Amino acid sequence: MTEINHHITDDLLRQYADGRLAHPFAVVVAAHISICDECRTRLEVSDTVGGIVLEALDTVALHSDARARMLAALDAPVAQPPAVRASGIFPAPVMQALNGQPPRWRMLGGGIRQQILSADDTGSLRLLYIPQGCAVPEHTHGGLELTLVLQGSFSDVQGRFGRGDLETAHDDVEHQPIADAGQACICLAATDAPLKFFSFIPRLLQPLFRI
Ligand SMILES: [Zn+2]
Image 1 (cartoon, protein in one colour):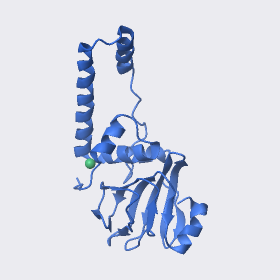
Image 2 (cartoon, rainbow, N blue to C red):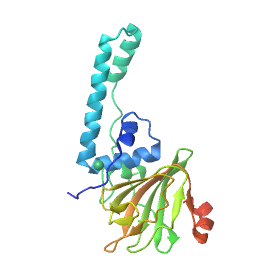
Image 3 (cartoon, rainbow, N blue to C red):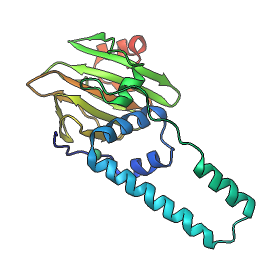
Image 4 (cartoon, helix red, strand yellow):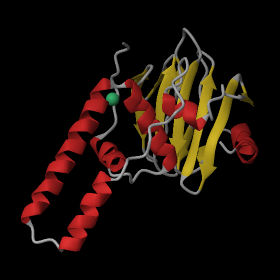
């Protein structure tokens, strides 16, 4: 199993466990958890602690109706895990976002390709293909950006990221990921606002490709 060095932050894991993460970020976190034993264990521990807190509520004088409804909600069947399976480098949550189909790449120039998986008010989710040695144009973003490496690796000011590594970048980070030599880097990236590129041509392309 590949060694993973960059994990989900405590804050993001808590938001994911509480179901408070917007769809694009939840998919990236779910994809990381599906290939990272360490974060899967952290999530299980966090769920267990949440259960203990609920049991402690027994000692609180809670309205009996409210308590019954809460317990009924806990007994309700949970959402079924995705029926779609992992395929090749793509974990199950990514295959589900792809509707079970292989990616349909669109060329962005310079050998870079992308497929937008979702884009709405909550943010956007995309797959990026960066040829080895190539850079994603320098950019900042309006808020949070999460990037999960699925193949190859890239490096930027925050370090080196290989398969399974998750980069968390906030809007104060101007970073320029460069795919390392070896093979093309394929990433799953979520942003909560359109990316702002600094170089001239990518900004012109932005409305066309929603990057
Ligand atoms: Zn992890």
